[in-house]
Length: 224
Ligand SMILES: Nc1ncnc2c1ncn2[C@@H]1O[C@H](COP(=O)(O)OP(=O)(O)OP(=O)(O)O)[C@@H](O)[C@H]1O
Ligand SMILES: [Mg+2]
Image 1 (cartoon, rainbow, N blue to C red):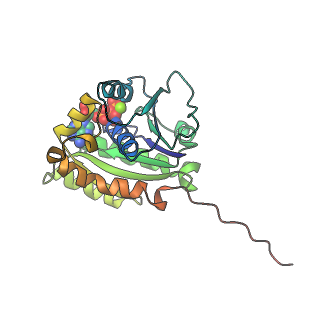
Image 2: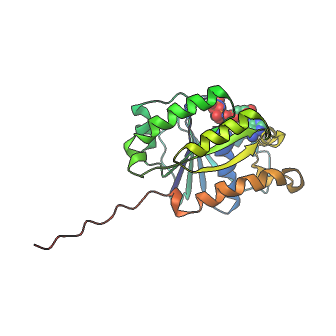
Image 3: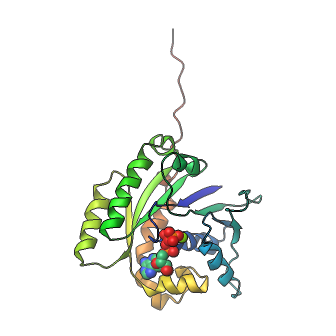
């Protein structure tokens, strides 16, 4: 089973937006998807509840991971985890166990950039990340190009020694997607085509080996 988590110590940066859209993408591809909401706010589960109003779109199973332990049903192919903000220190390593891939959304704001910088320093020293058991990448979110703050964010994300996948623009499509329980992949292509293009690098990375844990090299016995 593929495990993907959205996390950032900073609130409001797009964790739920990315988690729900990634869940929708893999469900649309015909996979059995479990969306685990670790946030007491329950926004990912609200999105799933809104999704029930539609017929003809793939089912996604939801779990309130605040109340229940996550035991994916047999045959689950993707577990997408939406984690609340405010996680720090040792707690990060605990949360990351069993997580193959972590995506960190970051918004263009001085406070978010500073908070993200500290969060990534914390991540890099965890056993999970330093031993490449969890692969991490960043995504700029709610971007308005041609602004100075976006240029600063881009410079910061490019300076990190981890993949900077893409920039997602500020768009009402994400607000509608949250409200309607749909992924942007499930909305009218004529209104979301600009967003879909920006998602390509995320989907490509998730489909590549570089988003999966490094397989430990086998120890070769030395000749005496
Ligand atoms: N690219 C975007 N364009 C426009 N609105 C966006 C975008 N990404 C997220 N939003 C909106 O910003 C708000 C915060 O996003 P979201 O809930 O995904 O963040 P979060 O990191 O999960 O927040 P929290 O820390 O509160 O859980 C939501 O109303 C969401 O619809
Ligand atoms: Mg959230």
